[in-house]
Amino acid sequence: MKTILTTLAIGGLLCCAPARAADTKPPPKNTSPDRVSVFQAPLQCPAAPQIGCGSRAKPMLLELERDAAVSEAWLNREGTKIAVVWKPESKAKARRSVATKLKEQEATEIKGRPRDEAITEFLSGKGWYRGAEVDRLSEEEAGIIAARLVLRVEAKTTLPKEKAEGLQRALTDALKKRFTDEKVKQDQDALLKSEGGLQQVAGQYLDADQIPVLKEAIASGLRPLPNEK
Image 1 (spheres, rainbow, N blue to C red):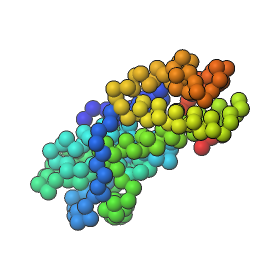
Image 2: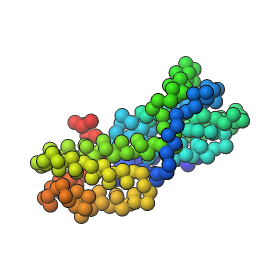
Image 3: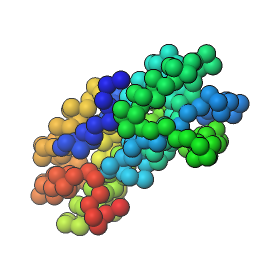
Image 4: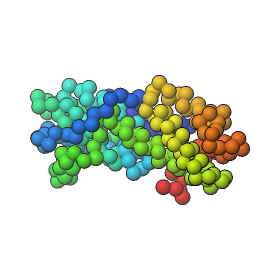
């Protein structure tokens, strides 16, 4: 299993994987706990620490499900746990092999009473995302970042409410594409780095002299600054 827990970004902060049809069904309630292992994982989103990072988790989950011993792989909303549902015919040796590979990716198996609690949480079916469904987290992340950038812009220039709302929508859409569509990732990256690109994204909401303010807001990073949420 190749290393996939590297954080990339627009400007070197984040990178996101291509989208595909999402798996929306919760884990079956009749899944035997014996067929589930839960791993502690460092997959919180640096730019939105309250949720898991879809772009980092997605390739990991999809790679897990390509393993012959694995039936399903899920991420909890917070990005702190991965649940692996084993195929009924999977052997102990194959499970240990997967666990070893996950450990190499800084995901460690939860055991004892915490394991029982984690499995109960998983089997409740609330707040878990399978495979490409983590794109929903990437879309939520885009909205969080867009709101943050608009606040930075508003701190340095005056924006009417309707323009601020429009700018936030435009940035959210651009970031969603950047985070979930491999085909446009580089194009969106270029748009969000240059003044010309930002004029294309936000020109109807910002005057020409306000575009550099937005560029500066993005250059400050997508992660929250000390005074930001």
